[in-house]
Length: 490
Image (cartoon, rainbow, N blue to C red; front, top):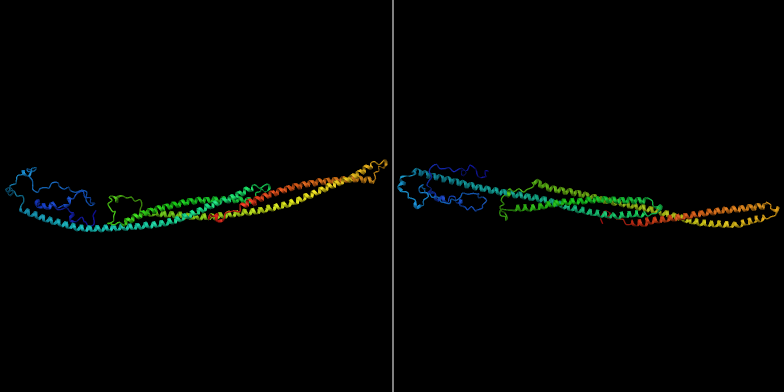
């Protein structure tokens, strides 16, 4: 990859030309050779990030500049025979031109190396400046991106916190309506028990008064109404409990999301404020190759947006359920009050009818008692009349008996005789008639006595019915929950 500021056409990047002429003697370059590359002698224990992993090893033996012959290799300096000077003079290796050419080549190589080094220094300075600017720009852009990320996190965190506050308020309102619903449901037990007690007590009515009247019909309707209201309240109470669980689940997701965002906000804010001079910075080798991300900005924003939408949906459902419960409480309260008043009206009418029937029975009983008294007086008069007829019967029969003792022809069937016979028959017929009337009067008296007993029994029945309806039932129905209690306010 080609880096900025360093072109592949630079002179120092090309292979160094090999001189064609003979090289100068190495002994003349000994001083420069020893320290030409001092950085090669650096200790390998240095741990620098830009330092390559391998270097040339430093030679363990310093080479000598004098050539060695095969015969002298492996001998110590004391055993080497000195080379004779005349031999050197006789066998010269290079010419004078070779010497000048070698020097000129060295000059040219030196100039070329200096030019290459100068270009390298210029390119290196420019490269360092460009890389420094690029590094600063990248770091500035990264800080800017971190700042934008911090702002995005702060925005979503504020949105989620706002939604959490609204969800908490909605949950509290739903909990309050749930408590009202529970209190209203508990208040319906009293009226239900009163209605059932009224039905139970009215089963103790006797005889003809044990009828399926309007009161009993109204009581049965009231019991059915209260049980229907209780069933609807229980269904809405179950829905309220389920909605509360859903609200808490949505709130939990929001709180977990905002907790994660709080942690991310703290981390990204710390990263944004890091500088080259900050404490705690260091190398973490290979961290750039670790990709622990599980989302992208789109899915990250969608996750929080989905949580908020879910919370808003649950809040809408909760608000609708609260309205339904409020309507239900008002409707059930009105229904129960309507049936309660209808039962009370039926009781009042029935009590009035029973009291009127009882008064009429008492009037008829008084008349019956009066008739019994008069009939008894008539019986006594008949008995006295029958008793009074015994004396005339005796007189008439005595006269007839005495006249049967008349002698002979004196036994005449005269007018007196016929009148006596007629009188006896007449008195006997009168007695028979009075005795029949006496039996009729006694039968009438028995009938009146039986009627009196029936009337007294009917009066006892009506008195029992009035006691049940007026004292027991209406006495219990004096205490009915008020409307605020039926809607759960108290």
